Amino acid sequence: MILTLVEHADGRPDRLSLEALTVARRLASKVGKPIRAVLFGAGAREAAAALAGQGVATATLVEDPRLDSYAPAAWGAALSELAGGSATAVVAAGSDRGNEVMAHVGARTGFAMAANCVEVTPGEPYRVVRQRWAGSLLEEASLDGGLPLLTIAPHAAPVEEATGAAPAIETFKPKVAEADLRVRVVGRVEPAAGSLNLADAKIVVGGGRGLGGPEAFGILDELAGLLGGAVGVSRVATSAGWRPHSQQIGQTGLRIAPDLYIACGISGAIQHIVGCRAAKRILVINKDPEAPIMSRAAYAVIGDLHTVVPAISAEIRRVRGNGASLG
Image (cartoon, rainbow, N blue to C red):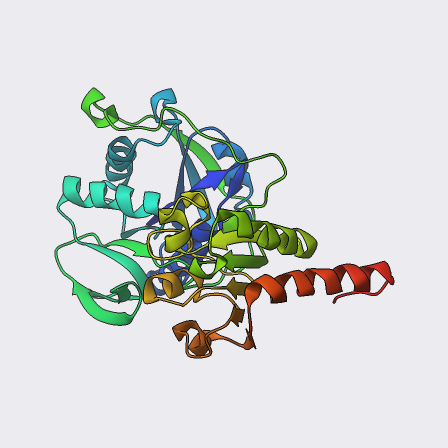
């Protein structure tokens, strides 16, 4: 079987896990094995039902109230136990949690782990292509030494619908030692009511050093609100305390894949490009025509963002006031 860790929230599988399932399906078809999804925590049953059409034969719900909150070593212990001697490969999303849990699985089992894979070819040995150096290069590697442990690079595969019914549901009670629970999530800070998840937004308005300070982000909030989008920021903006880390896009932040990314006052260091490279189109607003991010732009406005952004917002309001559509 292809054992696949599926992360979820509010009873729905998250996007990166669905992308990992796309790769798991391709791998399963090559080796002739079924996919078994593993889900932890509250809402797991609802999320498992939502896997209908994703090619999952069986969904295993880990039943242990101590593991309802994220506990990386304990989750790794449970996944290692499930892998046992029957798994052909273990797959997870290349998220913060997916990479951390799979590292624990590798440490426990002694099997090789390959992080941030974009291609997987089964065989003796398995061959993988994976992202290295913040995605600036691709590495071809082979995995020797038994069960392959694989995480899939964010946005390296599309979310594809597969035919099939909902998976069969089974439960599993793992053997977890108290020592495995020393590190665990004990509380959550919920986002503001009605706020849009940056990772899922179709339009993202990003701001960087060129904003000049926290007060200037009001014009980005306004534009994002008019477009039904979310605001993201570069590392400089979070390091300066202008905006929270939860809005950071980049190597040490979120990786986004919107239909449109509007980058305002962002130079485009490679660490930031890693986070936005999956955007379908990038509109750059910047005074510097030589800024590195210009090489990634589908569209560019050379000018002062403090003038350009409010002008865009004003035009959107004018068009809507006339009853016209922006589509």
